[in-house]
Image (cartoon, rainbow, N blue to C red; front, side):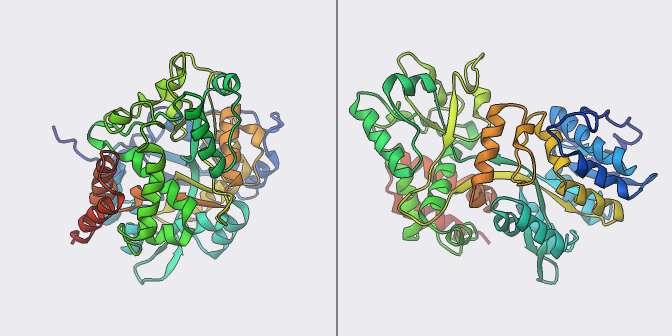
Amino acid sequence: MIKQLLSGAALLALTAGAAQAELLFKPGEDPRFNWASYEELKKQDFSGKTVTLFGPWLGPDKDLVERTMAYFEEATGIDVQYSGSDSFEQQIVIDTQAGSAPNIAIFPQPGLARDLAAKGFLTPLGEETAGWVKENYAAGQSWVDLGTFAGKDGKEDLYGFFYKADVKSLVWYVPDNFEDAGYEVPTTMEELKALTEKIVADGGTPWCIGLGSGGATGWPGTDWVEDMMLRTQSPADYDAWVANELKFDDPKVVAAIEEFGWFANNPKFVDTPSAVAATDFRDSPKGLFASPPACYMHRQASFIPSFFPEGTEMGVDADFFYFPAYAGKDLGQPVLGAGTVFSITKDSPEARALIEFLKSPIAHEVWMAQSGFLTPHKGVNPDAYADDTLKGLGEILLSATTFRFDGSDLMPGAIGAGAFWTGMVDYVGGKPAAEVGADIQKAWDAIK
């Protein structure tokens, strides 16, 4: 059955007239929060005005964003009408083309925002906001670059404000297993490789790796390669690769694939060497919790604890560390991740006011204190995070010298969600990296 897409106006009507969410934390009372930034919002009175938001968040995420926006509403008098849709990507294109766009659209990845900016459907956020992001976000220039697109006239401007990030450069482990074996958390890639070899020498298996994901099988391998690109090549090379200016069969890219292979293609290093491609990524971390452990480490993004055994206590039964950079390469501390982008699709003073709200520490701290929110904002209080796991992830973001978005998500669908996935399956199945890179590049060259 084909789902009928609602118009933007119809979607927004679903939330029109809804009661404003109550303030979860009473202003001035919780010392973790920057209440001065909340009071600053009160200097302009927009009573009776409305701003409309449209994004991908539904269910609990919808509740979280509405509880956060309640502080903006209370301080400014603006009525925020948020609506979410699981067909956001299709609907926002329809609405912008029909002239019925919301004031602000929340993009789950920057690629679609870039396309709409090129068609003249987004409003530049201005040099002042670009300067603010560069100054106030860790690895600020990275976030400016990610949100900067060419407009209809070809001129580049900041069109996207990143708010709510995710971290992928992580390795998960069981602290008790490390302690029992006498292993220490590595802080460089050289140390990580040495630990991998030591675990084998001690008779253990270092890694659990699974690329299985139904029709999306292969995508976990693309994350490995993206992380390796950031640890072996410059951010400029990474950007060129994502844009296909640096080809998939270039020696730099082939070398990054082989860096993944150093871990995944050595039968002594993985718990199921003959079934890496077939092992579902949701099942692959289970070896961490076996007795004795079937593996000691698992590289995956911040969402993977959802698939740990029921009752797993983070920080006790399982923990994580930053997937480290090479000490011998001058590439800083790169972080691979993702994030949501706020863009103005129908300009108004109220829309501008909401973008200003997103710059305030309180806009981040209120969501930090709930769940599922990470931020590179250097002006927030890390103690506002709801738990130590989120705080630790947030510290990785704040320590980043470079942040780059998941490359496959920025590539054309036929590549990032097609040939790249297939290539990773072929690679762990035995095909040489150079041939895999050539096959993916051939698929990219075939795109009209």
